[in-house]
Image (cartoon, rainbow, N blue to C red; front, top):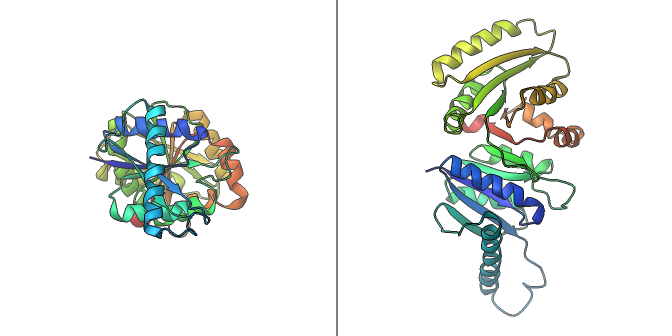
Length: 280
C-alpha cells in the first residue's frame, strides 16, 4: 500500500488541502499520514518538570487537537491505518518532514502552498526548494484553496532527457489508477532548431520504457518559457503540473527563484508534482 504524508498547519484555510490529500489517498488506495509540526514555547520548557515529560504531554495534547481537526473536517475517524496522525516537535517544518521520512516509508509528500492568509506558509521559496532537494520521494505542492476535483489531465513539462523518461515511468501507474491522460509538453526556444527531432527521439524512448497508452506530446516554440507554460496549463485545463528537479538546471529551480515565486503562485492555481532526478 502506498503512503502519502501530508503536512498541515491545522488552520481553517488548510481544510481544502486536507480534504484534497485525503481524497487523493482514497483514489490511490493509499495510507494517509497527517503530520503537524509544533513549535515549543520557550516559556514552557523553562519550568521545573523534566523536558521529556513536558514534551510527552505537549505531543499528547496536540495529537488530540489534530485528531479532532481531521475527524471534524473529513467526517471519518482516525483509525491508525488508512488515516493516521502524528505530531512532531520541531522549529522547522522542512526538517521535521525530512526527519519523518527517515523512519517512515513515504511515496508522496504533500505540502500546502503559502498564501496571504498565513505567516507560516509551508511553501515559501527556500522551504519548498530545500525540501525538493532532499526528500526521498515526489513532492506535491497544492494551493490551500484547492477545489477537490478529479485529476484527469496531467501536464508534464519535459527537457527531453533520460531522467524525464524515468519520471514519467513512475508517474504513469498513478495516472492509470486515476484514469488520467498525460500530456507531455516541451517549450523550445526558437533558436533550438532540433526541437522536432528531439521530440521524435523522446517519443521513441518513452514508448520503449513506459507501458501506458494515454500519453500525447506537444512541442511549442517560444522564448518566454515560463509564461508560455502558464498559458498552456490553462489551454489544456490541466489538473496537475509535473516537473523534474534536475541537479543543475531544473525548471523547478527557476520557479522558486525569488523573482518568480509570486508570479507562479498567482497564476498557477493547480497542484505541482515534482520528481527529483537524484531519486529516480
